Length: 462
Image (cartoon, rainbow, N blue to C red; front, side, top):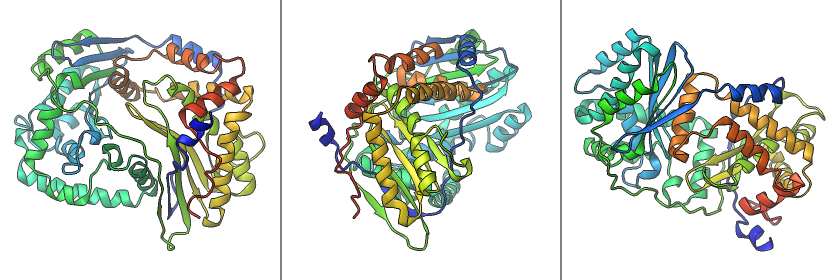
């Protein structure tokens, strides 16, 4: 164990002096385990079909009068290089600027007249285009999605220049959100000189130089059948969705010639940015975790729930579920903190983000490390049981509505090539921490193995 503990010693994130960050909302306490079990048993089946070109169609029919349908594409900023970093996000912006069949105005009017909602977002590993509409308008929604990702030859220079300015203004807005800034720097230091270390928006010089050829090349390289999932939830007939997918996406190329997964090595280090004009310190400390499909992913989710989150609006008291929250509010150590477990395909970040007064940073860091060590040595069975129930509750509450369900289907299809049934997730949560007679010892072993930690990590910026 000693060698494992020393392997990632010094793997810290970064701190930034700045304003107040957004806090997470507390979980309701009125959800019983029995109610959660009943809700799990009532979840409709997720049906999956794979087309001849490799495109996967997945849907869940809940009989609603509305539906959400979208394209989940295995292509994000991780598949870019230093020269074209920012292309995936730029392309997402261009998707709504018109196609061969529809001008931008025609597209906007058609969506509004349907009473629908069309949106998109880009992450480090995925690009998503989705629409929410009445169930009867599912064919039109799928046709619009197919149009905006396949008919890209209308990417005009005037539209590109206009959107270039929009993205540059968006980058300025992001710089004012210090939580976003902190996590961008955290990735930069944790995955130094790799694709995961670069930002999703890209550097300013790239945004100023990206041209039509860069956008078309990105589409032709990555928008291939095996890398796309058409997911839907709400009032959706799977047979109808499959037929629509065959008609609109059946001609997409079936061979992907790009690099499937650019390697990203975790290298622990630190970044410290100081601005004495800002009175509050924003800090993220992280160690390397595991990818989505790793067997230790769910145990780390439970450990993440054990740490929890807190801000001053929650109040205080000895009955707070998080021990770190009890210590923090009693000692007035920070404004807020939230634990995070960020997963990618083959790696991840497990840690804590906090907002503190500068004179309490060292004390807060000390108690964070002390709490991590406590998880490895003396966490109680009741704490583990409570964390498991909170994790189950959170999973169910996040699936409220067709849009989050559709997002869950699309993401899991890209991560696991299947949708994990909720009963299976519940079973994994239970079994992962009951395989050993003492749950505390199980957490101890998992944390030592997955997020190797050293007592020598005290205050590395001193």
